[in-house]
Amino acid sequence: MLRFYAYLDFLALGVSVAVIFWLRNLRRRSGVPPGPPGRGLLSDNRAELQASGKPRWVVFDRWAKQYGPIFSVRLGLRTEIVITDTQVAWDLLEKRGDIYSSRPRNIVGGEILSKNFRGVFAPYGDRWRKFRKVLNIGLSGKQALTYRQFQALESCLLLEDILQDPASFTHSMERYSMSTAFAVSYGSRIRTAEDRIVKEHDESFAALAQAVIPGRYIVEHIPALLYLPKCLQWFRWEAEARHEIDVRLLSSYLHQVRDKMDQGSVKECLSSRILSMKLPAGYTEAGVAYAAAAPYTAGVDTTSATLHVFMLAMLHYPDVMKKAQAELDSVVGRERLPTFEDEDFLPYCGALIKEVTRWRPIGPLGVAHAVTRDDYYNGYYIPAGSTVWGCIYSMAKDERIFPQAEKFRPERFLETTDPRLVDFTLPFGFGRRFCPGMHVALQSVYIIIVRILWAFDVVPAVDAAGQPVLPDSEAFVQKSIVRQPAPFKFLLTPRGPEVAKMVEMEASEAKEMLKEWE
Ligand code: HEM
Image (tube, helix red, strand yellow):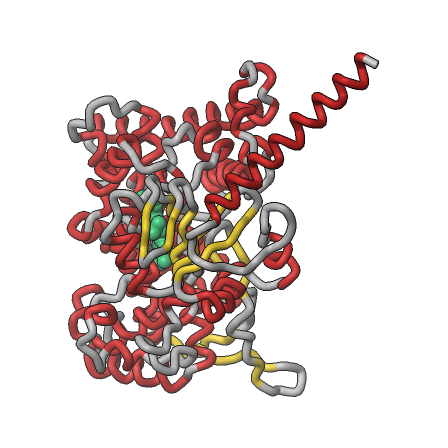
């Protein structure tokens, strides 16, 4: 009998907890921006998202048409707010940046595996502020100029690779992006994708990617598990072991830079700049090691994916390619490769680059922000702790700003005085979390695009019947938070007899000069 009452007590406790959760959920839902009704006690929207078989941003874009430019979705216990309009993004993520600049809590990937040192996941606060300060020392617009020589030299090797074997584009592009990121961080280059450094980074990145998969760890839903004795927190064991390996690895790169600085043989880079300055108070060696590694974590897939979008666009819009090539021929001529010094005289190429980043944004949902205080916007309640997505995918195809948005039309950036287009930075995110690597990224994108256009026609591959095959411009594969066009075939035809000679000569000189980074 006693046991029966114990069961009843237990049941009553369970029911009360469920009711409290439900009421709390109802209260929190009341007043939040409208959204799809969802299923179950929690009005959960996960099932609809999964059943759609589409990427989240496509479903969000559809829901925006039904619920407006700011709406809410329920994902498990979390309320997430989605913004699909640039004005709303400006009002909240930029103007109210003091409360909209955090990241959703990520216990295993952010707090345990990275100890909040990995700035991209770090919550808004002192540690993140120091991270940005340190990054700014090596990635600001002015500092980025010092990496141009390296980027120009590496681009010659990329041209040589694809001249010899156009099918190696993806491989060469990835090597270029890794080498540039590593040189920006540590002043040394990566010669081949088989390099030990690449393997070490891949392992570290794979562990991180696993740790941040939503829903993988129960502790993300029940943070109270963190009150268990540490030895019983099973989700902690693997992540802590990986953290130790990461700190050793990243510190060893930093020590190599320090040694080179002592010998006077270091190439200027983010690490050398950080090591020569007075660090913000309380900034540890581990903090420095993680900050110095940020270009590799955030700059490789993003740069490579953007250049794949460029290839895709050229296959679908040969007239745009011809127009950019005509500009290059008239400004640069056929006697030399284009350089960074030509940039101001190549407005159409500049507009083409902006259109590459707009047409198929490679980070369609950017990186989630989180709001740190309860807030109200246009009569809606936005509860503290909500995840807030700036849906770049929807904003980039807003017909009011980008008429005929589906078309790849660089002219849209030349025919306007609208500051949102003149100074087009939407693909790089919002407010205080805005991408700190934008200048370095755009330098890579510029030098590779203008050099490929100068040297080659990008043309469709042909099928067995000799018919051109155009790849699906909507087919993408997801790589962490970045998407890249699904593998596609194309041909590169040198634009004249001078190309092979010029590329080989430039590549051979570049190889000599790049020895300084080895
Ligand atoms: C075309 C290439 C790139 C694109 C489109 C891009 C885009 C973005 C976006 C959308 C964000 C999130 C901003 C937000 O939270 O609102 C971001 C963050 C970030 N990006 Fe980039 N990025 C690119 C290249 C790079 C490169 C080359 C680097 C490093 C050299 C870099 C470093 C970072 C870092 C460290 C963050 C985290 C900032 C923070 O949380 O405070 N990115 N990027």
